[in-house]
Length: 97
Image (tube, rainbow, N blue to C red; front, side):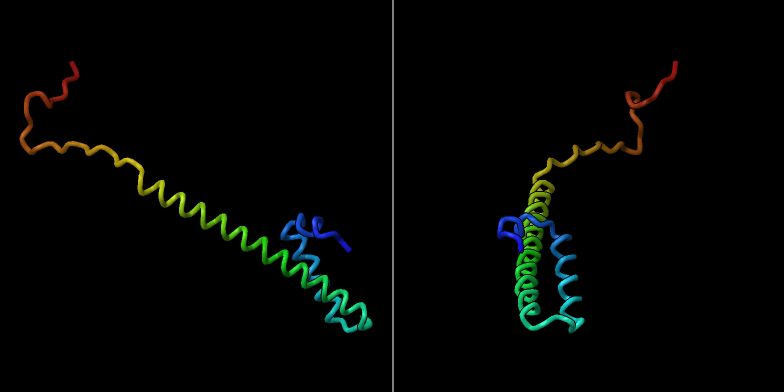
């Protein structure tokens, strides 16, 4: 059995894979009752770890989304490009030579 610190340090994918293994073992019905209870307890710890990691990831995404939204709303607007009138003025002519 892993310590609380080791379990907290598990990557989400590893914890999920371990949880899937436990579920498979429990569904096989080959475990004695005591072992079944142990696996259930371990599975519940892994469910909590996965839930906590998902909540952390969701919070980070929310923070990043809000930061981007704020950055987009406070970004300076591009300067307006002056439009030319239909009648050209002599200063607006392009000369090649």
